[in-house]
Length: 140
View 1 (cartoon, rainbow, N blue to C red):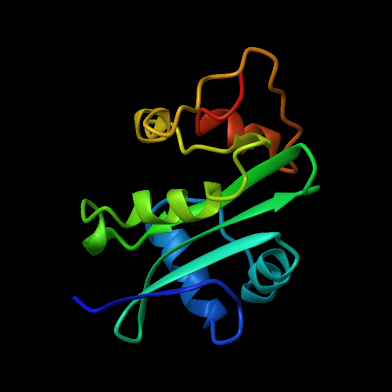
View 2 (cartoon, rainbow, N blue to C red):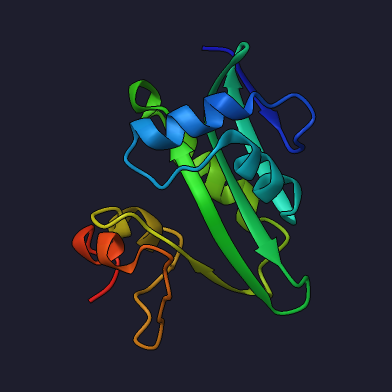
């Protein structure tokens, strides 16, 4: 495995981002939506094995005191190889003074606890497809 970390959006195949998100059971949209979301983020990371996209994530932030992490995904056949940890460490590095919130797929909370994330009692969400998100366990 030849790992390469890229922290910009210059050579990303957005169809591949969409397919990876779909394959791991995360929310996905048309490829151009992902392009816009990542390009408008404060921090992005893409991990490649040679030329194959295998993991990624992003953070939006005001740069002063708040940040939100989204779209942390690792291609299924690469899970368990510390790539998710690498994505998180890169997104968190230099942002230690920010309050950071993230969306976690139900069942993945223990992974994020390793980075000192805790369940928030006051977090609330308004989703476009509220019923589907409730059925997936994201809301009550």
